[in-house]
Image 1 (spheres, helix red, strand yellow):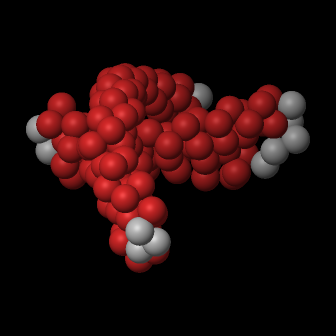
Image 2 (cartoon, one colour):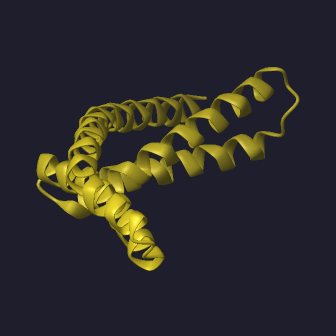
Length: 144
């Protein structure tokens, strides 16, 4: 019984540490999204004359190239701002990816625990989910 309690406490601590790192990364992601939105407005204000000029001259290829360039610049603004905040592009990229992965795992874990509490789930499925949670916690510790 004490082994189960120890693992439960270990799992709780890992989950708490990972959640705190994810919360910090969410704040930086929101700031990067705001910077991306501001960048979108500024870039649009700069590029609108070129885009409309290509449209008026019926240069379809140039028009679509400028539209694609616009979206690429907006996405680049998001990632560059986040990379500057975390001082690493790779760290920011992994943070964005792991935030959504963490949310999916926590949602699935809550469903599994509810089914286990109702006694409609096999204990092996709960252990499998706990191993998945520990794996994502390790990934968060290593990459965030």
